[in-house]
Amino acid sequence: MFRLSSRITVFVIAVISISHAGVAAPPQPPNIVLIVSDDQGYRDLGCFGSDEVKTPHLDQLAKQGVRCTDFYVTWPACTPSRGSILTGRYPQRNGLYDMIRNDVADYGKTFTAEEYAVTPERVLGMDVQEVMVSEVLKQSGYATAVFGKWDGGQLRRFLPLQNGFDRYYGFANTGIDYFTHERYGVPSMFRDNQPTTAEQGTYCTYLFQNEAARFVKEHKDQPFFLYLPFNAPHGASNLDPKIRGAAQAPERYKKMYPQYKDKLVKGKRYGQEALVPSKQKGRLEYLASITCMDDAIGEVLGLLDEYELADNTLVVFFSDNGGSGSADNSPLRGRKGLMFEGGIRVPFIARYPGRIPADSVSNEFLTALELFPMFARLAGAKLPEDIVYDGFNMLPVLTGEKKSERTEMFWERRGDRAARVGNYKWVQSKRGTGLYDLSSDIGEKHDLSAENPEMLAKLQTRFAQWKKEMAAAEPRGPFRDF
Image 1: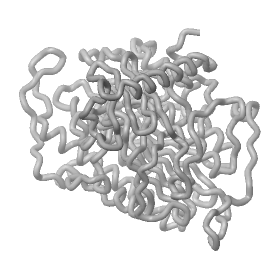
Image 2: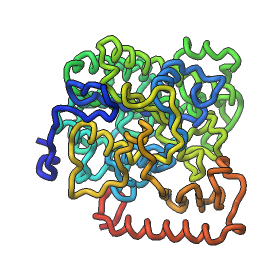
Image 3: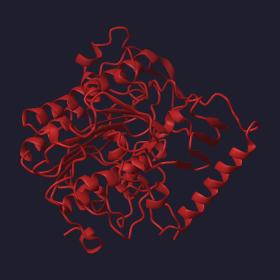
């Protein structure tokens, strides 16, 4: 039994209520497919305005469901953002409020196996007291699996099978080389609880695609939760200057973007002259990796159609944070790592036929904190009563039946902080500070601090109150001192 069973009471209901008259209740709770991309730009989808990237499957998904324009993640980079997806709690509440990463990779350091085994990247992870959505869904009768980027810790107690997942194939740290599956020279792929190099050399998106397809085929007759967190289009984690600094993609996908040259240029890496990817190569690899990912998603969606599961499946797609490097975040300001909109507002699509109207657009204020409560509600499960959640069931918002309950959101990354209250956004960071009215200034160009000092004080006060609430929460590791 999972540790969850001793902490919460879960019940399963036979049918899910349907708000639209005349629509029959599904025979079983809906399947849930959660797809997350890595560092994808706000505009880097056809359905979000790009006339360059080729994403036919995701564009079709948006046509069949809702596209959300004001959707936020909880942190401008991967580890804390992904932790909130699984726990439904602010990073400052669940304890994973910074990266699990060895920064010495920035200086070209290659670890021996013995050195790597005791590094922070290897030994840190999500606090084991946290309850993940996979545990709630598993207790409700769902088959559960994750294929791709875990980023929640590598030690056995942190891995997916100890956190409510039945199956796992992927890597547990923040990034890998797409072909060698190494993170800066360290083999990083797992199958369930065991490290593996069996598929080394095969492009990892293909591997995650194959595992996801197999899982759907094997569990088509029961409710399932498929978490598919890709690493595309994140840059390749390879120390070779010719590879690092860009994503990686198969040649057939790079040929789809002939306007970009696949070339290296003279530059610097680790303080020395080296051949590095050109800006054109960076954009080429980036776009091609997205299109390859889109095809992988297309196979999963095709299987849902083939097995007549699509009508009883909620499919959700978004990026874990804003785009970096070669991404296009327009019309937003900033990128990954920053508190401006380009770091934390991401493209979001959801499809649930019969519930979510097709080809709809929502401008409601929503966040990744709303996923856990929505998934639990769909599964007929109660949220653990002794855990504070920071979101709500957003399905009625996606269906257009209700306005969002979300009125404010807060972010903190070391010395950088931000708050959104209503349509006003306050940012205080090393890369810029200001107050902005997002209803008329989505690009955060006009600082209203001097014009509206009362609103500035209001947001700063609410941020300070939020900080006190997070500090008073039951302490969690791995960073907090308690």
